[in-house]
Image: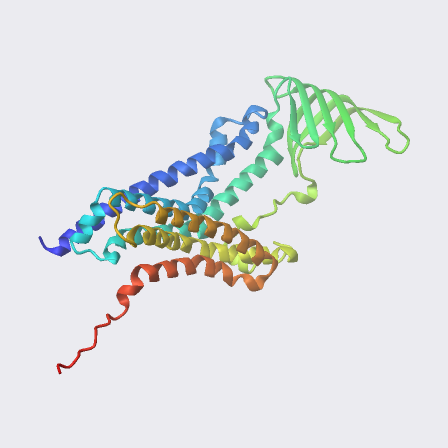
Length: 378
């Protein structure tokens, strides 16, 4: 059988196993992380009456950011696992016997790593910033504008950390009856407001409640006296933010790459500029770790002496190396925020392990073979 078609079929066979395993592992781990992280938003469904569909839409926007973080790790795990299984089933032995070089054996994994790198750049440069911007805008709208419209009958609803509203009943026309508002947004002027009826309206800074026939009770912190004010009509702003904060502040994780390196005036404070620059370099360098981790896994499974029952030392060493690289990446990122001169370490951390592993795997074959010198016959 010709060698060309055999190699092509082997490449497809190994790549198919790697790709299916990568999709399954990455998807499963991302859903597991989503399940654990989404628990902190269950309170919006339980206490504030948010629909389950809106809950799924809100938390689903976080999934791309999970995938971007775990993709280099799952690529390493899949390459390590699949090649270890091929070695245990003696398939790698057969491939070597068919004449495949280390590069030929590694070619499907390198193709997978290239696909992971491309996917990482798509996630880091486009999908993740867009999804996180939508998530934070959605979350901000719920907490500052929509939460007040989710008032439930007979429930003390925490509209924000310092504002609680109680409604005894709600009529079919939207009229609220038996209203109590505990307003602690002004630390030196805490107020308790009681009203017979009220109606929710939309104001320029968010939702308001228009109260009728009630009283406002305040305690003077200086004299300790209780001040009581009766009113026929009053308006209470239920927005969590003040009028000066009607525009949502943006985080470095949701802006574009151009804005990270050259933020528009007023978008970021001067003390946060180093953190934004580091975030930009991380987005460009992090996808390359998928290729580096793949090469580390290939060194563990394709080098060394063949053992009949397999070996555990090299796989464990590869796992330990990747764990150390992950910890080193976190440390380098924190140091680069404090000192911009250390930003090149982000790129060194992403590229150097892969370059070293590639040299260990393919370098010796590139060196010219040394032949023993000819000895003239005496």
